[in-house]
Length: 207
Image 1 (cartoon, rainbow, N blue to C red):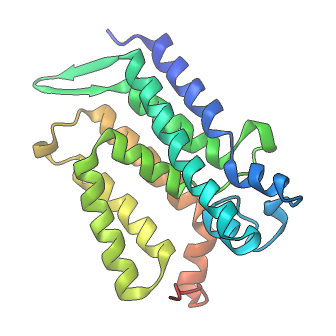
Image 2 (tube, one colour; image 1 turned 180 degrees about the vertical axis):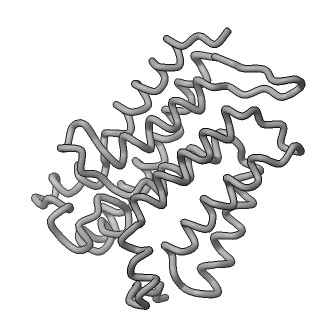
């Protein structure tokens, strides 16, 4: 029997932690609301563009750290489900999902956050580093071929979902639900990028 209260607690703690949007916080330190400048996204790329390298380094560390800490909290709560020989820590999955949702829709900052890709990547590595490395490989390949970071991010999320169903990884259907939710959130937050990709106006990565 799944301890629903612990799972909900993991989700809530992950969300509150993820809501500490480091790009918005760094912007306020610099006297700017980053959501009103550049691409208006409260994430790493816009922080680099608007605030500079030092602020972007803090955002990078903060976005990764909160995803990792949220997952550690979920892991500590230790709610597991078993399906045959397969097992997953659902409190870990809930806390990680909460962190990404909080980053994108932070309760502390009027529910206006970033796109969640970096925090989602940290969470995905915490729940399955092997699957995440495979997805990262696809991300690098797509970006190298097209120089579209947004396209690489979306493709990596979709690959993560696809391979989550492979028996070799021993995931329960809870894990697949988690993977689908992460991909949905990432694609939803990149919908403007998708429109620009379709119209041929998306910015390419420049070295």
